[in-house]
Amino acid sequence: MYDLLIGPFVEFEFMRRALAGAVALSFGAGPVGVILMLRRMSLVGDTMAHAILPGAALGFMVAGLDLFAMTLGGLLAGLTVALLAGVVARVTDLKEDASLAAFFLMSLALGVTIVSMRGSNVDLLNFLFGSVLALDDPTLILMAGITTVSLGVLAVIWRPLVLDCVDPGFLRSVSRAGMPAYIAFLCLLVLNLVGGFHALGTLLSVGIIIVPATVGRFWAREVTGMIMVAVATGVASGYVGLLVSFHSGAPSGPAIILVAASVYIVSVLFGPVGGVVPRLLPRRHLEA
Image (cartoon, rainbow, N blue to C red; front, side, top):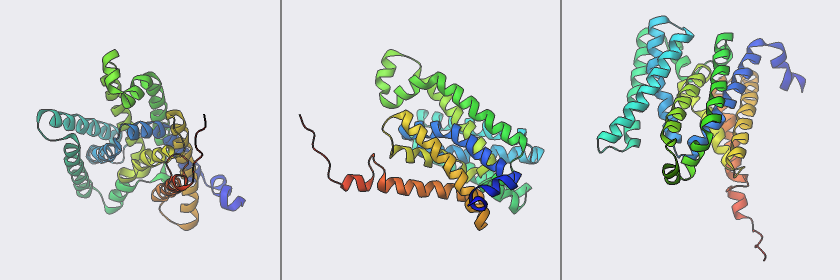
């Protein structure tokens, strides 16, 4: 059991770094994913994940695999796409989901083109699927910093953010904090996607945000409980996914997301809050 479950992390530093990165991502991405789900914006997360690709690719063209350049490019590209999609939706008759879909496709195509022109197929695969086993100290510090900033900002904007999910009309009637909180939340979403990009790539970074959050929905009714389940799912998926990758030779990033997806399927079937099997079981009638 030691060789199966613990040995790889004790013997290999790259496994310990990968696990630390997965834990850092989970603590920042869990609360962000739950808020995305409650706002019914899960597909917006997918769009924003692809929106950072051209910016990171431009940073790669200018400075190579430089952490600062790729991070800054990804942040600027993600925020620009969010702003442009919102502007298009408000000054035209196009709905916001269609606007985001258009920018999603443009961003993905542009990013892949830029990377293909400058880099190799290996670079393109790293951009799309990440390289969690190759995390270095600066990247880990960046990911831990993003998680710290995310938790700190969420603590400040938490009340208006959650109230805006539950009853936006009431929030608008008593406070003007809804829009600033929403903008700050979008910035946190882009930040966490950039952190996930360095570990899991563009195509999978949104998975560590959305999938654990959807798992939490089947196991808790309160927002705090959903976040706790989402964080625990992310951490467990990182640990088990890395072990699966190590022992089977499967790619580490997809293995982590597939483990999380397996937990999601189990939750859909057996989750006590809206799962298929609990819905089929007879319920006790309320008594006066």
